[in-house]
Length: 254
Image (cartoon, rainbow, N blue to C red; front, top):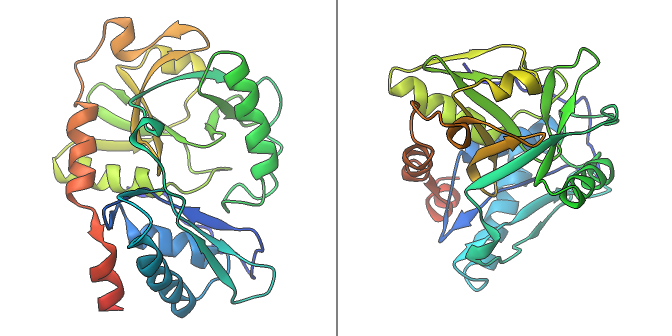
């Protein structure tokens, strides 16, 4: 099962996508294309941006976290290669629950609500966590400020309901890999308390790919709580990168 994408009716200035570029490969390029298209970008403009990124990346370094951004005028996309160092990446994460309401106005589009999301994550870091869970009015998890939460429960990969959250390119790739292995995937309401009872909790993002969540609101979860009879985070991390596609081949094809 994949998360449905919500099409935007018009160009959304400030919308964007970003991904980890290792060498010249990145995970789920089609998902990133759909994310930009949902904000109003057409495929020709996206191809042009990827081609420009290919040129810029050649001299930018072996590890990048590039961003493709929709400008103020329809049809204008800009790229920023954003070189990073390996110490920027991590394998684990601690989460807390954001104490206030989710104030995003366009959660299905990446970018317009970054000021709120950035403030939420900064508050989480000050509290000793890496990110914060954003809850809906019913108390169920939507996502974190800058990531997607999934849980392993009774051998199944459980995603939060696809309501009020950004469709995740990493989650989409993970679900495809799990189903290819014959594992069950499903969506279900998740709460912070339920995460503490899960066999494992993973935080997904385009930058880190998969991080093992060790604590939720200070309580150990998953491996940190003595569980761990689940598929390995590391093995799925390798699987997703084994399926990554080469930017050079993608732009040659286009």
